[in-house]
Image 1: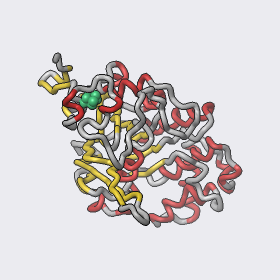
Image 2 (image 1 turned 90 degrees about the vertical axis):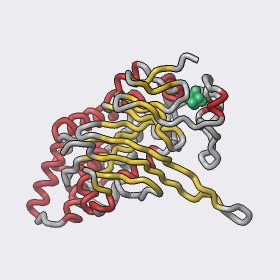
Image 3 (image 1 turned 180 degrees about the vertical axis):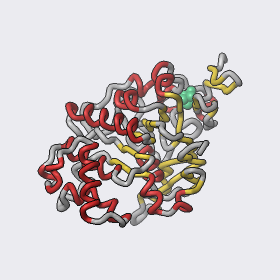
Image 4 (image 1 turned 60 degrees about the horizontal axis):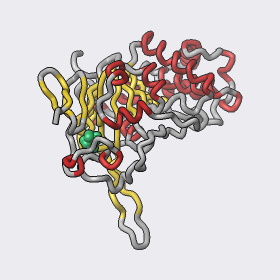
Length: 328
Ligand code: SF4
């Protein structure tokens, strides 16, 4: 089928936060008006600081949350129209922390085979063959079939999580910081495994990471998020070679935190990340932007550009030849 495999059309999601004896609950717009189209076989990375909305977007894409506004379409049909089971068969997550995402009371075989049990149809012997074949595919020895998660290393646990995600042959895998809880020595093994699996199985990835070195290695395209919105989107090589948005440039200049899993690049932007419940007017990045214009405090820039590259910044205008920087 032509057209995007999965498409987000003006997707927003808000939550009510706060509240108490003398305080009213207030809306937190975690994701605001996000539009994205992801083609079959692509690997799209969502990057940004903690709290920018990338994990909420991931949960929307796997159907764990429903949009407050807008629509998510898989092969042109909304997730709701596909139904929960069909979505789960076609889109699977791999979460950050393999320690908490695996049931400690279940064996490796039971964990990996659970999606098959939910789907039904695989008898005992057939189920075991499928699970063992998938274990081999992700580099887990068959002898670990009866082991429990606490008997495995961090890398082995993440391989179990990947095998569980792939056992029903999904088309899309949403990876939410899949290596950030692992030792540095194991991270590259898991990244290489994910790369190999994408090639071998023709998978489409949505890859969430604060680690730009990881993103450059695994993504074909990058979408940069700031305070719930996409502020820049481009092919990975182009974005790393010539970032346009001042926030993207700050991220690329950033020194990543040495604490795994914390997810906060040190952007050296001076001003702190704004309160998402009370975002700045105009361009939400303007309090931290050294290039801010008067207009930036007043008007929110819309995402301009085309399929090649998009940016939400008053410094750029869209023309037939692409995005060009304003001269005045
Ligand atoms: Fe900076 Fe203005 Fe561009 Fe926002 S719109 S990133 S404040 S220059």
